[in-house]
Image 1: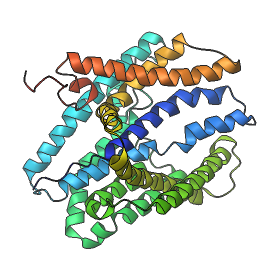
Image 2 (image 1 turned 135 degrees about the horizontal axis):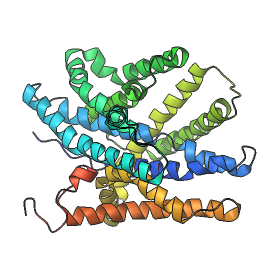
Image 3 (image 1 turned 90 degrees about the horizontal axis):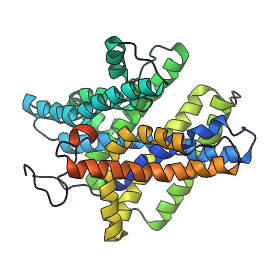
Image 4 (image 1 turned 45 degrees about the horizontal axis):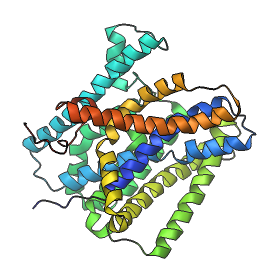
Length: 364
Protein backbone atom coordinates (compact mmCIF):
# COMPACT_ATOMS: atom_id res chain seq x y z
CA UNK A 1 0.00 0.00 0.00
CA UNK A 2 1.32 3.39 -1.00
CA UNK A 3 2.09 5.63 1.97
CA UNK A 4 0.69 9.12 2.34
CA UNK A 5 2.86 12.00 1.21
CA UNK A 6 4.01 14.09 4.18
CA UNK A 7 3.19 17.55 2.85
CA UNK A 8 4.14 19.39 6.03
CA UNK A 9 7.86 18.73 5.59
CA UNK A 10 8.11 21.38 2.90
CA UNK A 11 8.05 24.09 5.57
CA UNK A 12 11.02 22.55 7.36
CA UNK A 13 12.99 22.43 4.12
CA UNK A 14 12.19 26.05 3.27
CA UNK A 15 13.22 27.25 6.73
CA UNK A 16 16.48 25.31 6.58
CA UNK A 17 17.27 26.56 3.08
CA UNK A 18 16.55 30.16 4.08
CA UNK A 19 18.80 29.84 7.12
CA UNK A 20 21.66 28.40 5.05
CA UNK A 21 21.63 31.47 2.82
CA UNK A 22 21.25 33.78 5.84
CA UNK A 23 24.21 32.21 7.62
CA UNK A 24 26.50 32.55 4.62
CA UNK A 25 25.31 36.08 3.86
CA UNK A 26 25.85 37.40 7.39
CA UNK A 27 29.20 35.64 7.91
CA UNK A 28 31.11 38.62 6.54
CA UNK A 29 29.95 40.75 9.48
CA UNK A 30 32.19 38.87 11.92
CA UNK A 31 35.27 40.25 10.18
CA UNK A 32 34.11 43.86 10.65
CA UNK A 33 32.01 44.11 13.82
CA UNK A 34 33.87 44.16 17.19
CA UNK A 35 32.85 41.46 19.64
CA UNK A 36 31.91 44.09 22.27
CA UNK A 37 29.48 45.85 19.92
CA UNK A 38 25.72 45.33 20.44
CA UNK A 39 25.52 44.62 16.72
CA UNK A 40 27.77 41.64 17.22
CA UNK A 41 25.02 40.01 19.27
CA UNK A 42 22.55 40.68 16.47
CA UNK A 43 24.76 38.96 13.93
CA UNK A 44 25.53 36.18 16.38
CA UNK A 45 21.80 35.54 16.66
CA UNK A 46 21.31 35.55 12.89
CA UNK A 47 24.37 33.40 12.23
CA UNK A 48 24.63 31.03 15.20
CA UNK A 49 21.15 30.69 16.71
CA UNK A 50 20.07 29.46 13.27
CA UNK A 51 22.82 26.83 13.00
CA UNK A 52 20.44 23.93 13.38
CA UNK A 53 19.74 24.25 9.63
CA UNK A 54 22.16 21.43 8.78
CA UNK A 55 20.56 19.20 11.37
CA UNK A 56 17.15 19.92 9.80
CA UNK A 57 18.31 18.78 6.36
CA UNK A 58 19.80 15.58 7.81
CA UNK A 59 16.71 15.02 9.98
CA UNK A 60 14.53 15.31 6.87
CA UNK A 61 16.72 12.87 4.93
CA UNK A 62 16.61 10.33 7.74
CA UNK A 63 12.90 10.73 8.27
CA UNK A 64 11.94 10.31 4.62
CA UNK A 65 14.33 7.43 4.01
CA UNK A 66 13.20 5.41 7.01
CA UNK A 67 9.56 6.31 6.35
CA UNK A 68 9.80 5.04 2.76
CA UNK A 69 12.29 2.16 3.05
CA UNK A 70 11.83 0.70 6.53
CA UNK A 71 9.16 -1.75 5.38
CA UNK A 72 10.18 -2.24 1.74
CA UNK A 73 11.45 -5.64 0.61
CA UNK A 74 15.04 -5.98 1.75
CA UNK A 75 16.39 -7.05 -1.64
CA UNK A 76 19.27 -6.20 -3.94
CA UNK A 77 16.77 -4.66 -6.36
CA UNK A 78 15.42 -2.33 -3.66
CA UNK A 79 18.82 -1.02 -2.68
CA UNK A 80 20.15 -0.77 -6.23
CA UNK A 81 17.16 1.42 -7.01
CA UNK A 82 17.85 3.43 -3.87
CA UNK A 83 21.49 4.05 -4.83
CA UNK A 84 20.57 4.83 -8.43
CA UNK A 85 18.29 7.66 -7.29
CA UNK A 86 20.95 9.01 -4.93
CA UNK A 87 23.55 9.04 -7.72
CA UNK A 88 21.29 10.68 -10.30
CA UNK A 89 19.79 13.37 -8.10
CA UNK A 90 22.48 13.98 -5.48
CA UNK A 91 25.92 12.90 -6.71
CA UNK A 92 25.54 14.01 -10.33
CA UNK A 93 24.68 17.66 -9.43
CA UNK A 94 27.34 17.55 -6.71
CA UNK A 95 30.01 16.60 -9.28
CA UNK A 96 28.82 19.27 -11.71
CA UNK A 97 28.98 22.02 -9.09
CA UNK A 98 32.27 20.80 -7.62
CA UNK A 99 33.90 21.11 -11.04
CA UNK A 100 32.24 24.49 -11.55
CA UNK A 101 33.47 25.88 -8.22
CA UNK A 102 36.99 24.60 -8.90
CA UNK A 103 36.94 26.44 -12.23
CA UNK A 104 35.22 29.56 -10.87
CA UNK A 105 37.60 29.87 -7.92
CA UNK A 106 40.58 29.57 -10.24
CA UNK A 107 39.20 32.21 -12.64
CA UNK A 108 38.38 34.63 -9.82
CA UNK A 109 41.78 34.07 -8.22
CA UNK A 110 40.76 32.91 -4.76
CA UNK A 111 41.96 29.33 -5.24
CA UNK A 112 44.61 27.60 -7.33
CA UNK A 113 44.10 24.62 -9.58
CA UNK A 114 46.55 21.89 -8.64
CA UNK A 115 45.59 19.30 -11.20
CA UNK A 116 43.23 16.35 -11.53
CA UNK A 117 44.53 14.79 -8.32
CA UNK A 118 43.41 17.79 -6.29
CA UNK A 119 40.04 17.83 -8.06
CA UNK A 120 39.53 14.16 -7.23
CA UNK A 121 40.49 14.78 -3.61
CA UNK A 122 38.03 17.68 -3.40
CA UNK A 123 35.29 15.48 -4.84
CA UNK A 124 35.88 12.96 -2.08
CA UNK A 125 35.68 15.43 0.80
CA UNK A 126 33.58 18.28 -0.59
CA UNK A 127 36.56 20.63 -0.71
CA UNK A 128 35.65 22.40 -3.95
CA UNK A 129 33.57 24.96 -2.04
CA UNK A 130 32.70 25.64 1.57
CA UNK A 131 29.17 24.18 1.55
CA UNK A 132 29.82 20.98 -0.40
CA UNK A 133 31.31 18.94 2.49
CA UNK A 134 27.77 18.51 3.78
CA UNK A 135 26.72 16.53 0.72
CA UNK A 136 29.51 14.03 1.24
CA UNK A 137 28.30 13.47 4.80
CA UNK A 138 24.84 12.70 3.43
CA UNK A 139 26.34 10.33 0.86
CA UNK A 140 28.07 8.39 3.64
CA UNK A 141 24.77 8.10 5.51
CA UNK A 142 23.04 6.95 2.32
CA UNK A 143 25.58 4.17 1.86
CA UNK A 144 24.93 3.02 5.42
CA UNK A 145 21.15 3.10 5.04
CA UNK A 146 20.74 -0.66 4.41
CA UNK A 147 22.68 -1.35 7.62
CA UNK A 148 20.44 0.97 9.63
CA UNK A 149 17.27 -0.57 8.19
CA UNK A 150 18.55 -4.08 8.88
CA UNK A 151 19.26 -3.21 12.52
CA UNK A 152 15.85 -1.59 12.96
CA UNK A 153 14.11 -4.67 11.57
CA UNK A 154 16.26 -7.20 13.41
CA UNK A 155 16.28 -5.65 16.89
CA UNK A 156 13.12 -4.17 18.46
CA UNK A 157 15.33 -2.33 20.96
CA UNK A 158 17.02 -0.43 18.12
CA UNK A 159 13.66 0.43 16.57
CA UNK A 160 12.33 1.77 19.85
CA UNK A 161 15.42 3.70 20.95
CA UNK A 162 16.91 4.71 17.60
CA UNK A 163 16.94 8.40 18.52
CA UNK A 164 18.79 7.76 21.79
CA UNK A 165 21.32 5.42 20.14
CA UNK A 166 22.08 8.08 17.54
CA UNK A 167 22.45 10.82 20.14
CA UNK A 168 24.77 8.83 22.40
CA UNK A 169 26.89 7.53 19.52
CA UNK A 170 27.41 11.00 18.05
CA UNK A 171 28.01 12.60 21.45
CA UNK A 172 30.69 10.05 22.37
CA UNK A 173 32.32 10.42 18.95
CA UNK A 174 32.30 14.23 19.10
CA UNK A 175 33.90 14.31 22.55
CA UNK A 176 36.53 11.67 21.76
CA UNK A 177 37.41 13.17 18.39
CA UNK A 178 37.75 16.60 19.99
CA UNK A 179 40.23 15.09 22.46
CA UNK A 180 42.23 12.80 20.18
CA UNK A 181 41.63 14.38 16.74
CA UNK A 182 41.29 11.03 15.00
CA UNK A 183 39.35 12.25 11.97
CA UNK A 184 39.76 15.62 10.26
CA UNK A 185 37.58 15.15 7.17
CA UNK A 186 33.78 15.36 6.81
CA UNK A 187 32.51 12.26 8.60
CA UNK A 188 28.95 11.03 8.97
CA UNK A 189 29.20 10.67 12.75
CA UNK A 190 28.90 14.43 13.23
CA UNK A 191 25.28 14.25 12.03
CA UNK A 192 24.34 10.74 13.16
CA UNK A 193 22.02 11.99 15.92
CA UNK A 194 20.02 14.13 13.49
CA UNK A 195 19.79 11.34 10.92
CA UNK A 196 18.66 8.63 13.31
CA UNK A 197 16.32 11.00 15.15
CA UNK A 198 14.74 11.75 11.79
CA UNK A 199 14.64 8.01 11.11
CA UNK A 200 12.91 7.35 14.43
CA UNK A 201 10.38 10.09 13.62
CA UNK A 202 9.73 8.53 10.20
CA UNK A 203 9.21 5.07 11.67
CA UNK A 204 6.76 6.39 14.25
CA UNK A 205 5.23 9.11 12.07
CA UNK A 206 1.64 7.91 12.44
CA UNK A 207 1.89 8.36 16.21
CA UNK A 208 3.82 11.64 16.06
CA UNK A 209 1.81 13.52 13.43
CA UNK A 210 -0.98 14.55 15.82
CA UNK A 211 -0.67 18.33 16.41
CA UNK A 212 0.09 19.60 19.89
CA UNK A 213 -2.16 21.84 21.91
CA UNK A 214 -1.55 25.59 21.68
CA UNK A 215 -0.06 25.56 25.18
CA UNK A 216 2.42 22.83 24.32
CA UNK A 217 3.50 24.62 21.14
CA UNK A 218 4.14 27.75 23.18
CA UNK A 219 5.99 25.94 25.97
CA UNK A 220 8.28 24.00 23.63
CA UNK A 221 8.90 27.10 21.50
CA UNK A 222 9.96 29.11 24.55
CA UNK A 223 12.16 26.28 25.80
CA UNK A 224 13.80 25.92 22.38
CA UNK A 225 14.43 29.67 22.18
CA UNK A 226 15.99 29.80 25.64
CA UNK A 227 18.23 26.78 25.01
CA UNK A 228 19.20 28.28 21.67
CA UNK A 229 20.27 31.54 23.30
CA UNK A 230 22.27 29.62 25.91
CA UNK A 231 23.98 27.64 23.17
CA UNK A 232 24.68 30.81 21.20
CA UNK A 233 26.33 32.55 24.16
CA UNK A 234 28.31 29.44 25.07
CA UNK A 235 29.55 29.27 21.49
CA UNK A 236 30.68 32.88 21.75
CA UNK A 237 32.64 32.08 24.91
CA UNK A 238 34.10 28.79 23.70
CA UNK A 239 34.85 29.37 20.03
CA UNK A 240 35.22 33.11 19.51
CA UNK A 241 36.41 34.67 22.77
CA UNK A 242 38.31 31.50 23.76
CA UNK A 243 37.01 31.87 27.33
CA UNK A 244 35.17 28.58 27.93
CA UNK A 245 32.86 28.46 30.93
CA UNK A 246 32.48 24.67 30.98
CA UNK A 247 34.23 21.59 29.57
CA UNK A 248 33.61 20.67 25.95
CA UNK A 249 31.40 17.65 26.72
CA UNK A 250 28.49 19.53 28.40
CA UNK A 251 28.77 22.31 25.80
CA UNK A 252 28.44 19.76 22.99
CA UNK A 253 25.54 18.07 24.79
CA UNK A 254 23.66 21.39 24.95
CA UNK A 255 24.40 22.10 21.27
CA UNK A 256 23.20 18.68 20.12
CA UNK A 257 20.09 18.83 22.30
CA UNK A 258 19.24 22.28 20.90
CA UNK A 259 19.63 21.12 17.31
CA UNK A 260 17.37 18.11 17.78
CA UNK A 261 14.77 20.02 19.77
CA UNK A 262 14.66 22.69 17.04
CA UNK A 263 14.23 19.97 14.41
CA UNK A 264 11.32 18.37 16.23
CA UNK A 265 9.66 21.71 16.95
CA UNK A 266 9.84 22.61 13.25
CA UNK A 267 8.41 19.19 12.41
CA UNK A 268 5.42 19.76 14.69
CA UNK A 269 4.96 23.38 13.60
CA UNK A 270 4.98 22.26 9.98
CA UNK A 271 2.15 19.82 10.65
CA UNK A 272 0.07 22.57 12.22
CA UNK A 273 0.94 25.12 9.54
CA UNK A 274 -0.10 22.77 6.77
CA UNK A 275 -3.53 22.54 8.37
CA UNK A 276 -4.15 26.28 8.69
CA UNK A 277 -2.02 27.97 5.99
CA UNK A 278 -3.85 29.50 3.00
CA UNK A 279 -3.43 27.70 -0.29
CA UNK A 280 -1.12 30.40 -1.68
CA UNK A 281 1.27 29.92 1.26
CA UNK A 282 1.26 26.16 0.76
CA UNK A 283 1.88 26.52 -2.97
CA UNK A 284 4.68 29.03 -2.40
CA UNK A 285 6.36 26.76 0.12
CA UNK A 286 6.11 23.86 -2.30
CA UNK A 287 7.73 25.86 -5.10
CA UNK A 288 10.61 26.74 -2.81
CA UNK A 289 10.88 23.16 -1.54
CA UNK A 290 11.49 21.65 -4.95
CA UNK A 291 14.32 24.13 -5.50
CA UNK A 292 15.90 23.81 -2.04
CA UNK A 293 18.75 21.54 -3.17
CA UNK A 294 19.43 23.89 -6.05
CA UNK A 295 19.55 26.80 -3.60
CA UNK A 296 22.12 24.93 -1.57
CA UNK A 297 24.31 24.26 -4.59
CA UNK A 298 24.15 27.64 -6.34
CA UNK A 299 23.82 30.24 -3.59
CA UNK A 300 27.57 30.69 -2.84
CA UNK A 301 28.14 31.58 -6.51
CA UNK A 302 25.26 34.09 -6.52
CA UNK A 303 26.36 35.52 -3.18
CA UNK A 304 29.91 36.00 -4.44
CA UNK A 305 28.62 37.99 -7.43
CA UNK A 306 26.40 40.22 -5.32
CA UNK A 307 29.25 40.82 -2.86
CA UNK A 308 31.37 41.98 -5.79
CA UNK A 309 28.70 44.35 -7.09
CA UNK A 310 27.33 45.60 -3.75
CA UNK A 311 30.06 46.11 -1.19
CA UNK A 312 30.92 48.60 1.54
CA UNK A 313 33.75 48.71 4.05
CA UNK A 314 31.84 50.24 6.93
CA UNK A 315 29.08 52.47 8.27
CA UNK A 316 25.38 51.90 8.04
CA UNK A 317 25.64 50.99 4.37
CA UNK A 318 27.72 47.93 5.29
CA UNK A 319 24.91 46.55 7.46
CA UNK A 320 22.16 47.56 5.04
CA UNK A 321 23.91 45.87 2.14
CA UNK A 322 24.16 42.58 4.05
CA UNK A 323 20.39 42.34 4.25
CA UNK A 324 19.89 43.69 0.73
CA UNK A 325 22.26 40.99 -0.54
CA UNK A 326 20.32 38.35 1.38
CA UNK A 327 17.08 39.31 -0.35
CA UNK A 328 18.82 39.53 -3.73
CA UNK A 329 20.51 36.14 -3.30
CA UNK A 330 17.24 34.47 -2.40
CA UNK A 331 15.45 36.05 -5.35
CA UNK A 332 18.32 35.43 -7.78
CA UNK A 333 18.67 31.78 -6.83
CA UNK A 334 14.98 31.19 -7.31
CA UNK A 335 14.96 33.06 -10.61
CA UNK A 336 17.97 31.21 -12.00
CA UNK A 337 16.75 27.75 -11.00
CA UNK A 338 13.24 28.51 -12.23
CA UNK A 339 14.45 29.64 -15.66
CA UNK A 340 16.72 26.62 -16.09
CA UNK A 341 13.93 24.32 -14.89
CA UNK A 342 11.49 25.74 -17.44
CA UNK A 343 13.89 25.79 -20.38
CA UNK A 344 15.93 22.61 -20.01
CA UNK A 345 14.47 19.10 -19.53
CA UNK A 346 17.80 17.97 -18.03
CA UNK A 347 17.79 20.60 -15.26
CA UNK A 348 17.78 17.78 -12.68
CA UNK A 349 21.40 17.11 -13.65
CA UNK A 350 22.29 20.57 -12.31
CA UNK A 351 19.84 21.13 -9.46
CA UNK A 352 18.72 17.67 -8.36
CA UNK A 353 15.35 16.01 -8.66
CA UNK A 354 12.72 18.34 -10.12
CA UNK A 355 9.11 17.69 -11.15
CA UNK A 356 8.04 18.39 -14.74
CA UNK A 357 7.33 22.13 -15.04
CA UNK A 358 3.67 23.04 -15.10
CA UNK A 359 2.36 22.63 -18.59
CA UNK A 360 5.07 20.17 -19.67
CA UNK A 361 4.57 16.42 -19.54
CA UNK A 362 7.30 13.88 -19.01
CA UNK A 363 8.95 12.85 -22.25
CA UNK A 364 7.48 15.74 -24.19
